[in-house]
Length: 118
Image (cartoon, rainbow, N blue to C red; front, side, top):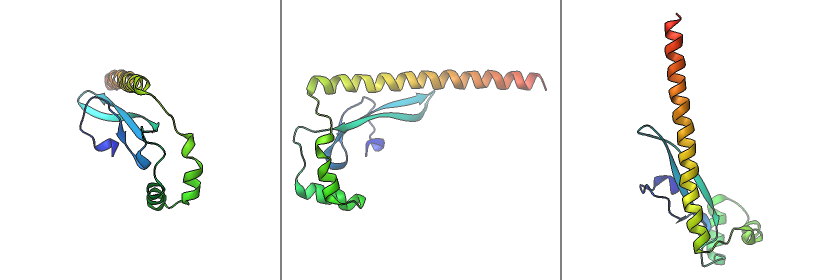
């Protein structure tokens, strides 16, 4: 699963049906607080085999025909576009981390002010 990966740098990993997903980590201080996820990208070998569709449909308890009907609705990106997505995933995560860090610092200041006024 994408949340179990220990790598710091974003990279594409296959998820359900083999669709590619990447994540950027959102940290506040030394704690991991969240992830930004980009996914739904078709791998080079697409679409999946009928057996893979059947297995995925069974795993999620859906009709395989419903899944098959939507196989064309994934994103197809070349290598350059995938590389670009990887850089943006972490940049967006870094912006979110900055906002969360600033909020955390502001809440600390407001708490200190509240303590002084009591």
